[in-house]
Length: 332
Image (cartoon, rainbow, N blue to C red; front, side, top):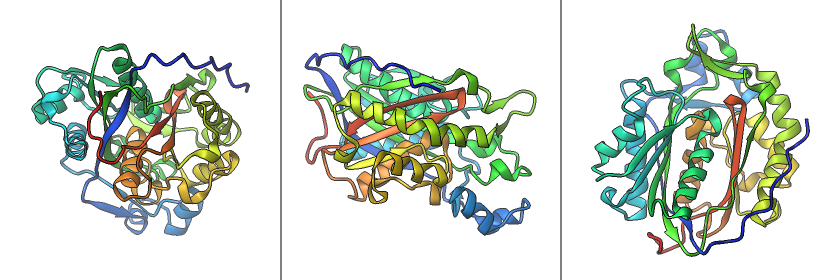
């Protein structure tokens, strides 16, 4: 499989977007491997050895919109921005139960926003990095000035708890970023695409409407192709992997994350490993992990971080972003 030709980045127009705040929300209920072993034929050792997960969060009564709202509110508070200032809300999700209204519309209303553009985006596990690119492009074009971008999933609603190849992976939660216009862009060019021959490898489809995947196909692709695509993402951003302060890939499986970082020459110390305690939360995994690293002080202010998502569709998207700058809560 050959990686597609990557176009040269467009010249800067003097307007871009930056991350002003990060936030996350995870349900209170923790399901560890021991509890899971009472539901399906598995063990803590089996799960850790194959996917590296120790526990995950499971939502009970909370909906995708509920979790997205909580994460969005957290990000707005971190940015010091009021919901009334938002003119764009984008929610990446593959697990919203309702077709209309959109999750973004519900979040906007719950937060008390005035009249932002609102829509959902479904690119499964790479949904957040796709949504981030769309919001950044909207700001670059002048169509928006302040955007809220959220990844939110309740995979437990679509899980076959008798299938140990998938149920050991899933977790619920939401993560969010606030973007503001800036003359100094802090979101690099997106590198995105798809792998049509793997479009059926990860799915939630009729008639079962349960999360299913061809795990070995995904694993082989990730080990053989993902590093090349992630490296291209750095290239079009004009940065080398060894210059990164952090690496936040989709939290699919620790046995994918660690080899991917090693192939890129990125140290374990700056690679997100949130999957260990959060499980695979699909489009929510990158923003949850990024928010944790920023809010805990593990990532320095105004430092470059590679985000790279991949999964159902089969799609991928990545960009190099800069963490919020100290004392900077809004853009120009």
